[in-house]
Image (cartoon, rainbow, N blue to C red):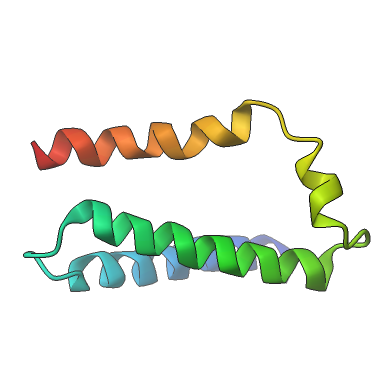
Length: 86
């Protein structure tokens, strides 16, 4: 039963934390500055988790396997704030 409940609880808890953080961003702050901080924190956390959880600790080798898709995701994410701000 726990295996069915914990993913739902994780989604709900994550959504609550996200909403609290989103509402706590100062209204006078530029949304793009806030988004920059969000991506920097995400990049640092991802890098740390890569070395902790990864079997192969060669980040440059993993970067050599990149294609176009990971580079497009942040660009698509930026479209929504651009239209909301204007």
